[in-house]
Each structure stands twice: as C-alpha cells, then as structure tokens.
Image 1 (spheres, helix red, strand yellow):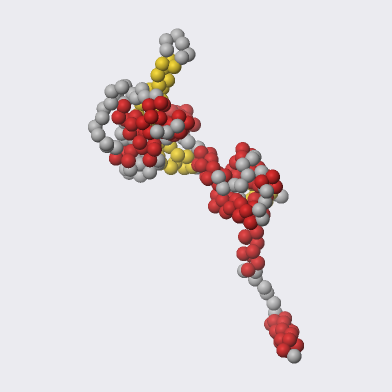
Image 2: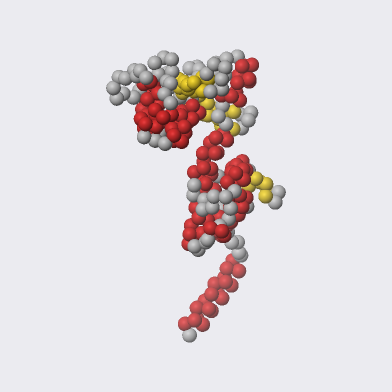
Length: 271
C-alpha cells in the first residue's frame, strides 16, 4: 500500500476543526495520507493496527466522518458476486465542509446543513439570498441535505440519559422528552420543559435515589419518569418560588389588628 507520506503533518482545516474529536482527526489524516487521488483502500484492520483500537471503535469513527460530510465510502464488489472486493474511502478535499445553522420559518425548526451544499439558500455579500441551484432543485433536495433538529435533540437526550439511574424504557423516554421540548398538553394545558429543566430533574431524582438507597427494582423505568413523574421534580421548584414572592394585600385596620395580636403574644411569652 503506497503512502503519500510527508511527515507528521495535519492540515489546518482538520487540526483546528472543533467538530472533530482527536481520534477523528487522526484517522482522517491517515485516510488523507493513503488517498492517492483514487481513494484510500485501507481495511478496518489497518486502522485497528495503526490506532490500536477495536474494530467497533474504528467503524464508529468512519461512520461519524461520513455522517459529518468529511469522507465518502464506496463498496466495490467482485464481478458477478456479492462478495466485497474492497472499500474505497474518499476524502472530500478542502475546503472541508463547514456547518452552518439554517432556520426554516415554514417548518419552524433549526437544521444543520453543509455550507455551499447543493440546494442551500446562502446569503450573498449584499445581504440578499441566492440559490446554489434553481428553486425546483432546492425543493427536491432539501430533505436529503438537511440534518433535522431531531439529531440535535437525540444528542441532548443521550447526555441526559447517561445520568438516569435505570436504563429500561429508553425509546419511549426519548419520545416523551421530545414532547416536553415541543410542548405537551396536560389536563388541557400545554406545558413545555427546557433541556436544562429536564436535565436538572433527572439529577434530582438520581440524587434522591442515592440518598434513599433505592434498590434498582424500585427505581422508575425511563418511560415512566419521563412521562409524568418528571413534573414532580420540575414544578416543585416553581411552586416554592411563587410562595416566597407571594403578594399579600391587607387594609390598614387589618394590619393594626395583626400587630396588636402579635404584641399580646409577645407579652404573654415574657410572663
């Protein structure tokens, strides 16, 4: 396997990219080094030996780079056979794809897209909007080039789920999580919870279980907690705040009477 080796050198577009982990930067650089215009033919075993990682982790890294738009992967089969001959990893040459946030007023959601991707509406230097392709192409390709807000929600939920003390009911818990973020009707009233509120609620429940030494079998499954039980750990905080700042209105006569009764109690206590 020929290597276009130029020493220990990582392109600035890779090294300074905050979207990539250190392992992703290393494997991306290795792919770039082995890509002699026709692509990189290295197998997972090569990367396993090179990076001293398990195959599962190598697959995760390559899939992550594909999903983020840094490389393309193509499987080549032997002629007239379903047997794989080789896999070709082709790095997308600089400028490497950058991510920009695009808000769609029609769908009321935030999407992450590749900058300068086909069909994306970009702002020009004069502040106007210009299409990379015609409107018909945009309409046909939007669904393919956008990464929907669902991916962002999934990432946020995964971080929260790591803190949750019981790992059953994850799928339904995620559905309830999305409903709370969007707004959920409870007793005819739409209630919303922020990601921070949900995260704090999970941490409170986890701390409570730890304090009470709750056995695992008695800890609520994820789908039960994220359904309605979560409100016990979010609304309590609001109710206490309302109680502290509760406004009391009384007349002057009522105030004088209260103070009179209070003085009597103080006198009786002193005796």
